[in-house]
Length: 295
Image (cartoon, rainbow, N blue to C red; front, top):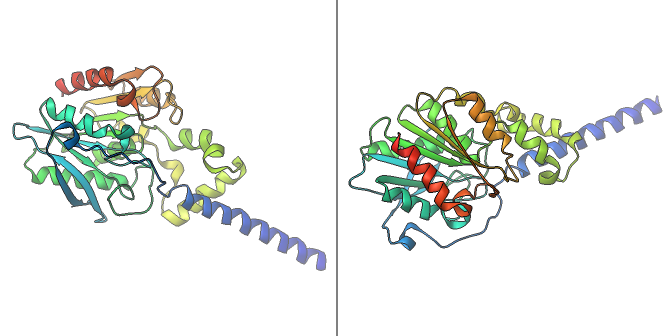
């Protein structure tokens, strides 16, 4: 009897330890981390902008943004940064420069901070699942500025790319989608990076998935932007990626292209993750402006 008691107690301790680690990892790994700060704004490049606030469409979180109005523009572009970044520090602080370039080709531009990042409310990221509500809130903001259905484009980097895919599926006002260094499937993303990101053996990953579902409310393994991307056409899609991406392997870009053969795919040589505009600015702008001319 004593032996059975100690066996059961040991099993209980092991189970509690396993799922305790799973809970801690699930919450810790989705907490927005510290990131380098940069001081550049659109004003750095001589362009005026407005510091704006609006509500995320579904849960009403306050989302911060910089709006670059353009009196002659009939179209607008929303720029959405990636994980552990913001409107000010994405692309090593060069997202403002990209916004100014897009303004120069005739677009109004709205740069936003996703929930939990920059100046926006929130504490955690959800691999694009709830961040899509922030993008939809940005769409609502632009619709109030007078832009018409189909005349709003979205450009998302990494995590931001997953958010804009889901937002575009739900919102017909989004007329064009640009994906920069975006993952196709969380399983393809998490498993190869699990040990380096968490410091834990693969043995703990199933427990993390289970606790994530219990704590956050959805199955992380079912977050597959590639699966919903097919619902965006005939609206145009541009996929930009580097074959040297150390975080999101270029295989993700090919998977997105395979899902939507009509999407335009541009692969850059030896660029870092979500730093394509920093590393290859001329090539990046050429690909982007060519795509926008066909929108």
